[in-house]
Image 1 (cartoon, helix red, strand yellow):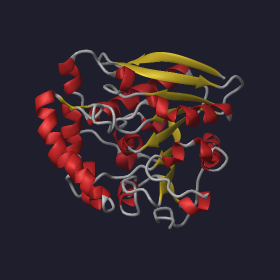
Image 2 (cartoon, helix red, strand yellow; image 1 turned 60 degrees about the horizontal axis):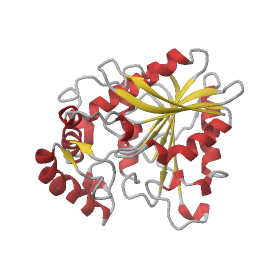
Image 3 (tube, helix red, strand yellow; image 1 turned 90 degrees about the vertical axis):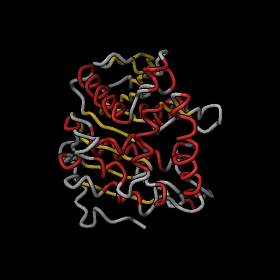
Image 4 (cartoon, helix red, strand yellow; image 1 turned 135 degrees about the horizontal axis):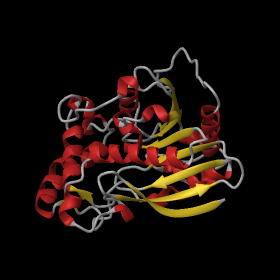
Length: 302
């Protein structure tokens, strides 16, 4: 396996930092790995390498403004939005289609990396998607007491800092990477709305394709995740009305751990269990016309 560090240029002038993990033999497919909000791509490196070792090409990358994709110009950084991240997802997929035209394209999306799938104009290139703890983000639909933290984050901390700094200084608070003002204020609006970003379709979000997504989607969520929970996960999935969805709950006790939460699935302790399941999903999706054929597709597996 080769690891190649590179930048992926966007059509509007950003350079997105990425790592390609290239399987040395004939690959089963090409996986675009979309990270979560405020994360660095290196956090996901172990899972990305594992998937590549099982026979895939994996592109692990960072949205504009995150990690090594952060522009030097403060005003440019401040103006980045969530919808820009959706454009980045489309740009990366176009890059992978051009670089690897002969292999099926797949996607893994953690959290926001799955939410924005329906904003990708070129989503039809994909053969399938695996969502990891991806859900809507309405703060009062998160479980107690985490919802109090979410309220403070979006309705006290963000409006007190982002308008004056030009960004949310989350890194110095050891919360996550700094978030641009445009992005955190747009995200704040979504998280303060009952139907999250879906209340803004055809309004502040003019282009969207959720009804057009006709892909097999495997969604994993942890039963102890305060963010992606039994309410917010199906609240996202129901908007992929024409997708072939299988939703699976991960219970900590089934994996002999005390907690999984929003980030636990990325621990190497799950390489022989959850990671194998993810790889099997990708292998199935890479085959021709994969379907789940589950009569209870949209039900939460509790």
